[in-house]
Image (cartoon, rainbow, N blue to C red):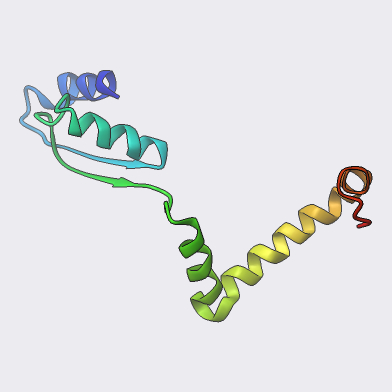
Length: 103
């Protein structure tokens, strides 16, 4: 992260007085937030946004269940069922042996 910001700053911003705006998503957001918190690159970045996945998984699932009358939850369920169905031949003997569940 630091090397990338240093390079961008030296190559495109130092002599032209341009500003750097940074955005990080998921692990990139985590790295950006840590680098900014440590003060390693804060003198080169004017503004930043760090986006992460929700940390409260239970609340996230409850929100998805009720969002748009459950259409998100329904869509995910259809997708997961299709994946499950395509892998049924592989999963069925494993579930039978380990959990005594006949799929």
